[in-house]
Amino acid sequence: MFRKRSVLLSTLANAILLYLVFASTAALSDQSIADQYPASILYSKPIEVIPNVWSSIGATAPPTYENSGHNNNYSFMITGDGVVVVNSGSYLLAEALHREIEEITDQPVRLVINENEQGHAMLGNGYWRDLGIPVLAHLDAKDTFKQTGHGSLAQLKRIVREKADKSHVVLPSETFTHKRVLEFGTMHIEVLWLGHSHASGDTVVWLPNERLVIAGDMAFHKRLLPLGEYSNTANWLESWERFEALKALYVIPGHGHPTNMDQVRRYTKDYLLFIRAEVTNLLDAGEDLQAAYEIDQSRFSHLDTFKELASRNAGYVFGQMEFE
Image (tube, rainbow, N blue to C red; front, side, top):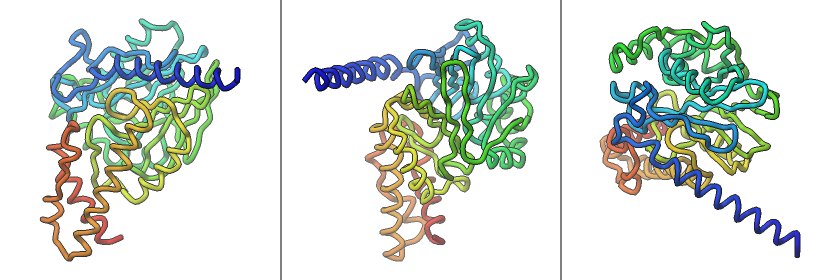
């Protein structure tokens, strides 16, 4: 009886903690708010998601001058033996994040991890490498960024202008292929590649003792997930099963406030299943690409970036599934 009561109390405590975390951070990602932290180039001031795990939550809008291109999440872990950062943004965003870290802890940054090959994950690598700090990414992410990095930089400069100052293409200094285990201070950190999903080099950072996952673009919930030539929806669903197997209690997604597995499942896996089922019906009926653009996706219309991405996503999936 005592054991059952302890389990129930523990479950209740976790539920209350989750509610407090999500309630306090829900406003920290919003497509309609241009800048939530005017004192900094960062979109929002870092918040402590659970003890020693922090995140500066980016806008859930496309990159703009007003949000400084900070439209994804920059997270960091204070381990007792240094700080591990996830994502570098741009040079000036990385510098601003570093200032925030130094306000919170005297521990030095020991490692930076890029969640994938996109510019908002990698274009600040130069800041950290100038300080001699290693940068880790999946091998595919490094190889892709080597080809696309200058294009990403040019796009950033067009959008944020002088806020892209000092940003330049710097490749990760270290790579992994499936798993890298890190032991820093009190933290056991697993850097994982679960398969090609949103992009070929997507990386997940898993803290098994804390049951927290920094999911990167494996998982979406606040904004509609983007699909393009870099994505593989069939493989993403396979990778998702490995992601679910982690049994995370806390999820820091690539975009949007911290949440839980139920939410990201609803707006990632369920969306992928939905759009693929709709496209399958069109293909079976001999319909064309225009019909894909007209798929009724209104059940997801409350998500940020829906207007920008819904039709484009359907067109991409139609083109991909024609040749599966």
